Image (cartoon, rainbow, N blue to C red; front, side, top):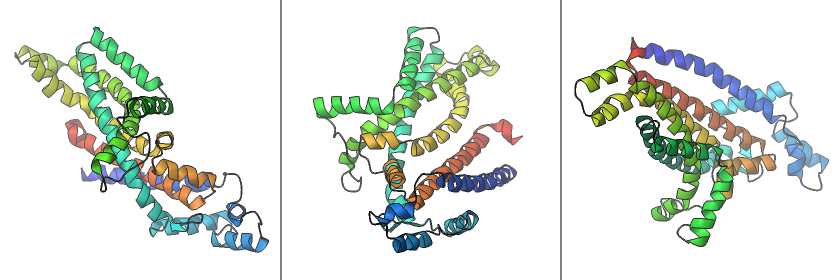
Length: 313
């Protein structure tokens, strides 16, 4: 396992370096000059010059990159010039909100997608199979913002069961927090549940036709034991990787959902930063999201290595 981990880490470091170059390079393509935006309507040349010097915009691009990456390596992601707060502090405020939303979404997706995939594979060709495939098609084709609006109209406006929008910290009111987060979490988890269902069904169909499953049935084991103990355990191996990567996608893909439900997470933070040309915040959020995705990919590989004995040979 040590050699496997060393090899994965050796491939991650160049990837991270390329990611930082990509983030910094794409940042330069954003239209407008942040110094002129922050200078206000008067746009005093002295103020603009001061801001450009403060943000190192008066230096060549390679020097700007070196200055930025050296700060990143020391844990300094810069400062938001719009609200005068360190980017690291802003991220630490918003990350737990989006992390909770993504965690609830992945739990909902697993609770729906994996059982639906197993039932669809075991009941292949029956009404259960067709119903599960219709659900998967519906989940993949339904836009998140549209589903979110419909849920607000039904559960908040018509029935009055849940709040329409907003966020409450779980440390202040856990019940209120769950009530506010359950709809956006379901909106995000719905689409990913469809993906999990399709992958679980495909993996289960492949496992159910394998020799060791036929041997288990020939030994007289009950169908429940064959499916849950022998087939499902092996079929979930690729789902582990998919789940880890899906969590990373949910962390970075909550922009529309957070906007619909007015949740102050990563999505709202980066949207506000882009509109206000707050370069440091945009770079910090994208860098943290990309790094998280890479780390989750590593953890998925390690989990796959542990679960699959053939990779240890």
